[in-house]
Amino acid sequence: MDGVGATSRDGTLLRLDVLQVKVIDQDRLPRDIEGKEFHKRRFYVEFKIGGTKKKTKDCSGKGQLAWIEAVPL
Image 1: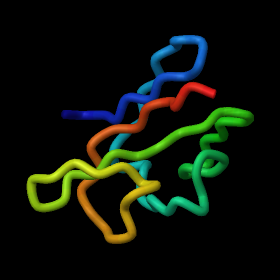
Image 2 (image 1 turned 30 degrees about the horizontal axis):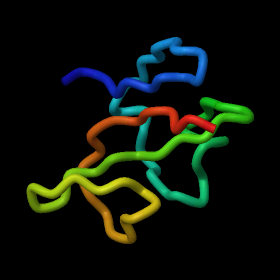
Image 3 (image 1 turned 180 degrees about the vertical axis):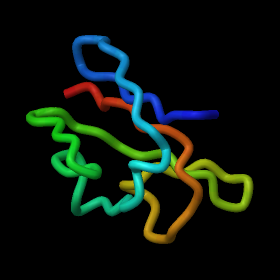
Image 4 (image 1 turned 30 degrees about the vertical axis):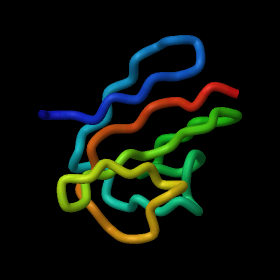
């Protein structure tokens, strides 16, 4: 996989370079992901940890970034 997919509320698919997504911290989402701003949108990040998928709101540890997707308001 060469990028991370992010889907906005209006269904627009955004592509982010995995190398640009370095800091995955729930406190920094959704407004600051390596200079990319997603104003007034809610995002969660899904991680793969030990074969188990977890979202940022449930994840306190570090894991491999799987993808980013918009959460409906």
